[in-house]
Amino acid sequence: MKSEFQKRLISSILLIPVCFLLIVEGSILFNLFLFLCFILTILEWNKMSKKKNYLTISGYVFLSISFISVYLLRNFFDEQKSFILFLFVIVICISTDIGGYIFGKILKGPRLTRISPNKTISGMIGSYILSIISTIFFIYIYKEFFELTLHFNIQIFILTILISSISQIGDILISYFKRLSKIKNSGNLIPGHGGILDRIDGMLFAFPFSFLIFLFIKI
Image (cartoon, rainbow, N blue to C red; front, side, top):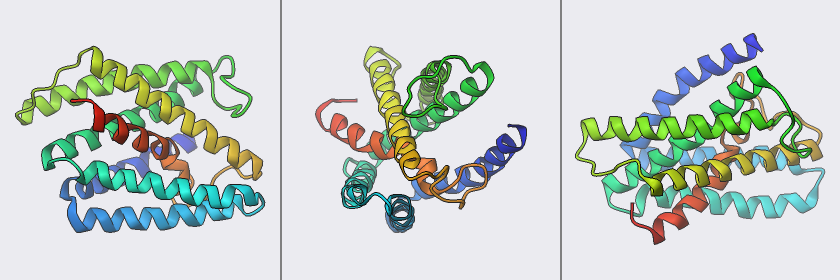
């Protein structure tokens, strides 16, 4: 566990600043980065689902919709709002993943579901706890540096729980598909994490859901 955690930590330290700069920059650099991730994800999905033909086409359609929603969320609203909402979703998804990993590894306990035997109830609770804490911290930091009239209220709390839940469901479903294909990771591009698909599995589900929600509610 220690060696795997160290690899995940080092990879995250190197990747997060680069990804953040691309998100901040937006425009063509972000779009090129998004397109590259889409191509790599398609290749990994194709490799994962080649023994399950019924997953291939449906997977291509879903991945296309998911990446389009990522693009729209970053570009659809005015610049500041798009940036805030995009980071909002990213923060929740990443903290959900980290909380589930750390709490699950340390506390262990009963399995959450048979579909993904490595997921535990303690990991699920940890995902919610860390996502809420991270959202509060994100709002506080953003208000300190920008003119942001956003407060952690019941609406934000519910949104955080919903996005975290969708991210966890996505993680479980992708894990299930990997089990069907009898592989542990979708690739080995990122040390300690696996492939791109392993890293963004929850986000693939969270972004389409979040974009639709943000279209109909004011935040």
